[in-house]
Amino acid sequence: MTAVIFDLDGTLIDSAPDIHAASNQVLHDAGFAPLSLAQVRSFIGKGVPHLVARLLEASGEPPSGPQHAAMVARFTARYESAVGLTRPYPGVAAALEALAANGLGLGLCTNKPVAPAKAVLRHLGLDHHFKVLIGGDSLAQRKPDPAPLRAALAALGGGVAIYVGDSEVDAATAAAAGLPFVLFTEGYRKTPVADLPHVAAFADFAALPGIIADLVTR
Image 1 (cartoon, helix red, strand yellow):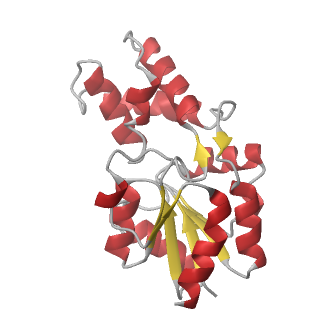
Image 2 (cartoon, rainbow, N blue to C red):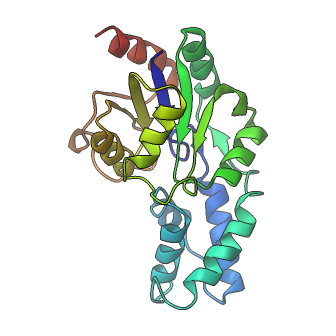
Image 3 (tube, helix red, strand yellow):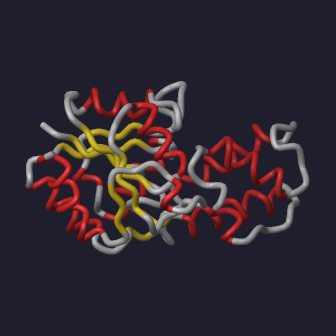
C-alpha cells in the first residue's frame, strides 16, 4: 500500500489563531506584552519548546532561560483545549476522503504534541481519516530529524510513501527520510516556493488527489 503522510499545522489546518491566543495568554500570565499573529505564526513548526523559546526571545528574555520550562508547562496545559479558532483549509476533508477511497493509507507526522493534535482532529471531525499519528512528543526526536516520519511510515506498514507539508521543516524532514515531498503553498513557510525542494506543489486541496495519483503511477 502506498502511504500519504501529512504534516498538521499549516498543512491540513490553520491553527495559528489558537496558538496565537494561547501564546499571548501565557505571555500575559508571565507579565509580558502580547505579540502579533504574524510573529507567533512565524514561530510555529518546530514544537512547543521552540515556540516558547521564540516567545521569550521576542519578549527580550533569554530563550532558554529560567522561565522556559514553566512557560512550556503553562502553554502545554492550555494547548489541548486550544481548538475553537482552528479551521481546516478548504477542501481538506474531501481530499482525504478521495485519497482513502483510492486505497491509500493516511498518516500524520507533526511536531504538535499528540494530545492537542488528537483534540483538534476530533473537534474538526478529521480524526477518522488517519491510521497513524506521530506527534512532537512521540519520540525523543522531532522534525526535521527523519525519525518521526520514518516511524509514521513503519506504523503504516512500510513501503512507498509521500510526505505532504507546508514548511521548511517539512521539506528538510522529507529529504532526510528520502521521501518525495509535496508542498502546500498556503501554509506557514517563509521561504519562496522555488527555493524549497519538492516534487509537486499545490494551493488548492482539490488538486491533491490528482497529484498523488500521478506520483504513484510514476
